[in-house]
Image (cartoon, rainbow, N blue to C red):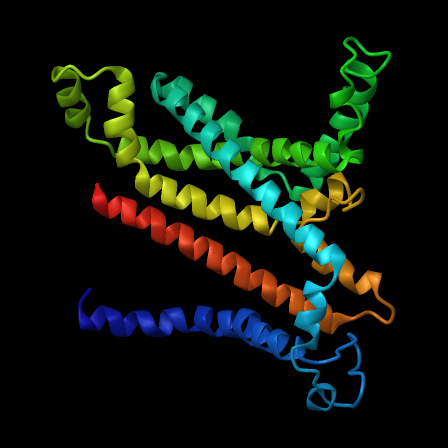
Length: 299
């Protein structure tokens, strides 16, 4: 891009930059400041201005001494580990299946798998709540159902079963989206590399392990980044499916409910948890991107 075009891009990008600063950067900075105060939502305890209610790192210390926050952090980590593994595996699996189909059939196949991603989180949560509580618990796997399987009954009313129920919901939503990313990566693999490997006597498994997977590392970087960040930020689905009951609060739900759990509402503590939440997501995603990017360089 020459200097003339660069100068023309600046005024075009300026409105978006101003909007980003006003909507994201400034509120985030204000939130960080408020996390060091005794903010109550509509007033500051201890004074009329935020500097008069400054409490230092007290909110951060209280956050790590709050059992619900620690429990939600552990539950979020468990959910994220399981969900990332399951979504990555199934999205790669269905993309490989679609890649072998004819063009028209593959397009229909990908569209069907992508459709759940278009639904909102609350809608998905209520749909799967009906599936788990009515279809699973009463029609299919309940005491009077077709097949009695107690482990698949009342999945939203148990801490462990709710985790797998949430993983199932989120996998159904995200597999189609991640499948598209893997499909693009598969299309970018030179066919002559695969043909050369087969001419050299490589089996299908060896071609997949030594050619396909290494060439898909850029796709893995994107898929893992998106899946990790979305798992940590999951909110609507958690609220609609269990509302955080039975010890199933994820971090985003815990931050939202903190003001309801305290009287008067402790927005300073909630904001401190939000800052910790941001640091955690940033650290995890940066480490993941760094590791997978290095793998791309080694290819």
